[in-house]
Image 1 (spheres, rainbow, N blue to C red):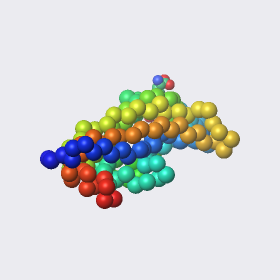
Image 2 (cartoon, helix red, strand yellow; image 1 turned 30 degrees about the horizontal axis):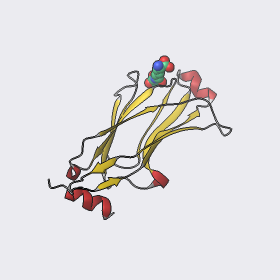
Image 3 (cartoon, helix red, strand yellow; image 1 turned 45 degrees about the horizontal axis):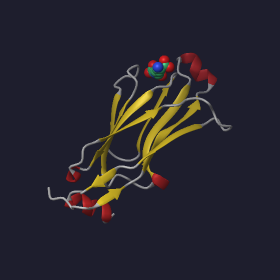
Image 4 (tube, rainbow, N blue to C red; image 1 turned 135 degrees about the vertical axis):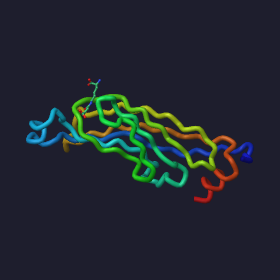
Length: 143
Ligand code: SLL
C-alpha cells in the first residue's frame, strides 16, 4: 500500500456513556439498577463509518458475551446493570487504511445523576493518520 508522505490527518471522536435509573418495579425483579448506553461518535454527531470499520466494546466479565462488536453506526451498546467498571474499546479502521486498531478506555459511570436523571460521561480522542495510505487519504479527504 503506497503512502502519502508528509501528510497528517486528524479525525476527532467523542466516546462515553449515559445512564438512567431503572424504574423501581424493574429493580425488584433483578439486581440491576440502571440502563446505560456507551457510544463512540464523531464530534457534532458526524458520521464516522466512512473510515471506521467496526468498534469492539469489551464489557466487564460479569456480562454474558462481554466482547461486543458493532459493525455499523450507531457504534453503541445499551445494557442494564448494577455497577460501574472500565470498558476497553477498540476502534478498527477500514482495511484500505492499513492502520492498527486504536485502543480507548472508558470508565462507565452510573452515578451521580443530573437533575433529569441522566448522566453523561464523555472523553475525547483524536485518531491521527500519519502518512496515510493513498486509499485512506482519498477516503478521508473526499468525504
Ligand atoms: C463493582 N468492580 O464491583 C465493579 C464491577 C460490574 C457490573 C461492576 C453486570 C450485570 C449482569 C454488572 O452490572 N456488572 O449481571 O449482567 O462495582
